[in-house]
Image (cartoon, rainbow, N blue to C red; front, top):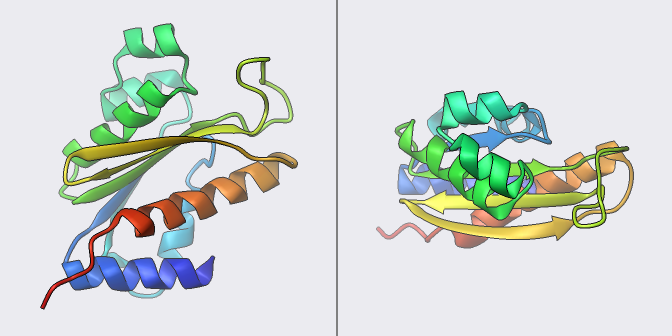
Length: 160
């Protein structure tokens, strides 16, 4: 994952873009992983840890009625989180994650390991659902890896 982060850092820096994170189930691990890299202040703007529904609403502007209708672990909430991080910062890109890391909290529709990820690039949002296996730490670390890989896949290449 360190290689992906280094490539992501180089790409963002070459584009002269900053990124922001909006994290629920990972509790700030994506931001921590990014800022572990020296020089991250050149491309990492800020991170929001919005573990509670109130935090999602207060900090990112996720509408409470969307959370009530769809649940915190949903495409609609992940998209709203990504847009919230994008519009509340000077970052050009954001990544958002919301999921059920376990060991409990799952349901038939949303079992433990269900994670919604969303990426916002210049206001355009892409989202996907993943179902990661393993224990709580495995789900969280797989989410971090997919969040960073997904952002890198969606970034344009810098033109000189």
